[in-house]
Every structure is written in C-alpha cells, then in structure tokens.
Length: 318
Image 1 (cartoon, one colour):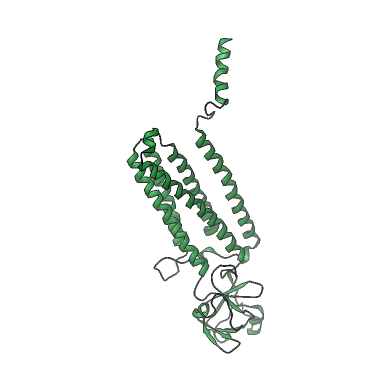
Image 2: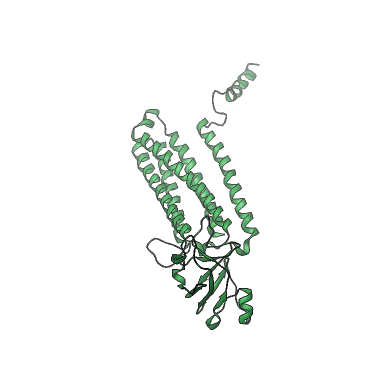
C-alpha cells in the first residue's frame, strides 16, 4: 500500500502545477505553443499563395525575371541578392546557436559577443529586404504597358513609343516620361528592330503568321513588321496600388503581405535580442544563474529563419 502511495505521489506532483510535466520550463513550453500556432499562420498564407499561383500558372510572373537587381551592379543578376539575404539570415541563426551554447557554459562575455552579431545579421537582413522592396515597388526604367483590364505587356530590346499626339518616346525613357500617373496621350504604336512584346510573363512567337495576323493576335514581330497597334494608355513601373509591371497584381499583393509579415517577425526578434543583449551586458543572467531567456529567444529566431527558407522556396525558386 505504501509502495502504491509512493507511486502516486510523483504523478500528482507532476500535474498539480508544482513542476513541468515534460521537464521543460513553462516559458519554453509556451514559446513552443506560440511557434506552432505561428507555423499554422505562415502555412495558410503559403498554401493560399500556391493555390492562386497554380490557378494562374500561365501568366504568373517568373521570379528570375522580377528580382534581378544587385547593389552596384548594372547587369541583371537573377535572384543573387535574395540568395545573399538568405545566407545572411542563416548565418545569424548560426551566431544565435553560438550564443545559446555560450549560455550553457555560463560564459557571459561570449553570449554578449554572439548576440551582438545576431542582431547585426537581423538588421542587415531587414535593410536588404527594404532595398529589395524599393526596387520591386519602383520597377525598371522602361516600365511596362498597362491595358484597361490591368494586364501588362513588357518590352525587351530597343524600341520607340509613338503617342497619338505625335510624340516619340524612347523605350528606355518611357517610364520617366509617363511617370507614376500616366497622364499623357495614349500610345499609338510601338516601333523597333527587333521588338519583343512579352505578355504577362511569357513570350508569344510568330510561328510564320502574316503581319496582319501578328497585329491582330498580339504576337512578336521583327524588322519592318515590328509595329503593333495597341490600346494601352499608360506606363506602369514596379508593383504598387496602380498595378504590377511584372504581371498579375495578385503576385505583388502576396509578395508584400507574406514577406512583410515575415519581416515584422524578424524586426520583433531583433528588438527582443537587443533587450536580452542589454540584460547580458548588465549581468542579469549571471545573477539568475542561467540563460534560459537566450534559449527562448533562440527558438524564436530559428523559427523565423526556417520560415524564410519556405518563403524563399515558394516565392523565388518554385
């Protein structure tokens, strides 16, 4: 009887609120609860994005045509800057691992050192994301033609826009001439040698059609046939409330919301790490005798890093 009673005692003490039933502090457990719920949120957003993208697969913008800018490089370098951003965030996760390990060893100086570099990595990622957003919002210099139904046509090569009022606008200056408002004469023709009209993310080719058929079907033409009567009335640059230079407007909506939501998580993590960093410098955790707060912050930071891997895969690679 006494043995049975002795066997019941630990069971009662585990679940009566005295200690954690999973040998984990309540702080860590609630952090895991939060991360699981947040994972559901990001999963829902990415599933919604994948569903819409599949629905409009033929006209969905291609990431390697959209994200081509790199600081101080004039040439297009598809996805290179995004890859650099990803590397920076992954390295900040490595420095966080080092900070947690230093906390286990009660090395206060090392914890401060690695936390500092984690914070630097977080700020660098946020700055890189702001730079990417800036170029995505402002787009390329030539912009794209936007039709009344809000679809767009992108041009490559050397071409000239002839407006209804007789003004000729070089293709590489079209965006500067029209600006964001597009309050100029409707475009009458496009002329060039050659001209590639890229409709909503994929190139339409002539396949031996006559000039009349090319004009009526909106295909690409070269040489003397490089002329197309169109009804576009404005140039759209970048992705904004007016439209999306790169194609489907929904692409921009998803991009801003999901990457912005993730960026908010990164910013929150940086603020939390700064607070903990100041506490480490103040000797708070030396007095407590443990660095559990660093571990909890590390869980959150690794989650943010992992989520970005999925965002990177869904938006940029697939």
